[in-house]
Image (cartoon, rainbow, N blue to C red; front, side):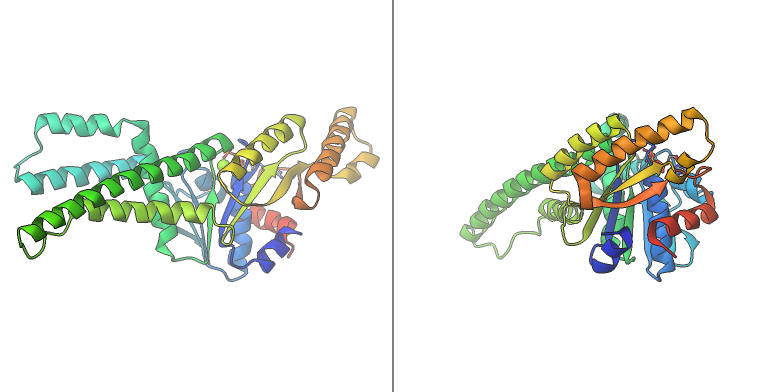
Amino acid sequence: MSLRQIFEEHPERRYIMFGGKGGLGKTTFSAATAYWLAKQGKKVMVFSVDPQASLSDIFKKDIFGKGPVKIMDNLWAQEIDADQHIKAYQDEIRKKILDMYGFEQVPEEIEQYIQAASAEPAMEESAIFDAVVDIVVGGNYDYYIYDLVPLGHALYYLSMAKVYDEWINKITKLREEMREYEEMVSRMKRQKHTEEDQILGELQYIRGRINASSRILTDKEKTAFFFVVIPEEMILIDTKKAAELFAKFDVPISGYVVNRVIPHELFTQNIPPYLKNRIVMQDKYLGQIDQTLGNQVAARVPELERDVTGLEMIQRLSEIMYGK
Ligand SMILES: Nc1ncnc2c1ncn2[C@@H]1O[C@H](COP(=O)(O)OP(=O)(O)OP(=O)(O)O)[C@@H](O)[C@H]1O
Ligand SMILES: [Mg+2]
C-alpha cells in the first residue's frame, strides 16, 4: 500500500509518527505529511519535543517555545521548550507552598530543594511528557504528527511512560486503600462524610493523563507509526533491532519509508564511478529491503539535489510522497 492509500483507507489513524535513526528524514517527512494533510483540508498539528528546534529550521520560522504557531491554512506547528515548563512547575510549587502554609516567602531550604529537583533529568522528561499530553488530549486537531527524536530516545520515552504508569498505579492503589480505612473509621465514629481527598484526586488526574497518552501511542486503531530507513547496511541492521523493541512496547508499525534513494536513471548516464558505486550499493540494500519488508514499504523517496527547508521544498516532497 502506498502512503496515500494508508491515509485514505485509515482516516481513523490520526496520530502519526515517523521514527528512525538520527538524520534519516523524520522531521522532513513529518513536515511533508503535515503539509499534504493540511492541503487535503485536515486541521493538522505537527509538534516536536526536540530541543534542537528542528521544525523551526524546516519551516524557516522561529517557533521554539511559542505554543502552536500557524504555518499556513490548516497547519500548525509547535516546539516544546522543556525548560519553560520546568520553570512553570517551580512557580506552581512555590505558590502551593505559600498558599498552604501562609508563608510570606518560600523558605531557603525549600527553595534549594526545588532547585535541586528541577536539575534532575527525570524532571525534564516529565515536563516534556506533560506538554505532549496537553497537546494530544486537547483534541483541537484532526491529525497530530509527532516529529520524533532519534530512535533510542523515543524508546526511552515510551519506557518512561510505562514506568510512570506503573508507579502512579501503585501509589494510587495505596491511597485508595488508605481512603477506605479512613471512611470506615469515620463511619464508625458516625461522622457524616470525610473531606474530599485532594491527593487521591491529583493522583487519579495524573493517571488519567498518562493512560490517555500512552494509549494513543500504542493504539492500533488510531496510531500510524512509520519507520524511516535508507538503503545502507548498518541502518537496516539497527532498524530491525528497533522494530523488535517497538513491537515489545506494542507500538503498531504502519509501514516503512525508504529515503535518499539515488534516482536509478542516472546509472545509464555519463556519471562518475563514485556515483555508480553508490547506486550499485543502494541496489543491493534496496533488494534486501524488498525481500525482508516487502509490501510493508509504503514509499521510496529520492535523494533531492538540495536539503528540504521552506514551504516550496516541503510541497515538492509532499507531491513525491503523496502525489498531487
Ligand atoms: N530525500 C532527501 N533529499 C535531500 N535531502 C534530504 C532528504 N531527506 C532529508 N534530507 C535532509 O537531510 C537532513 C536530515 O533530515 P531530517 O532533519 O528530516 O532528519 P531527522 O531524522 O529528523 O534527524 P534527527 O534525528 O536529527 O531529528 C535535512 O537537512 C534534510 O533537509
Ligand atoms: Mg528531526
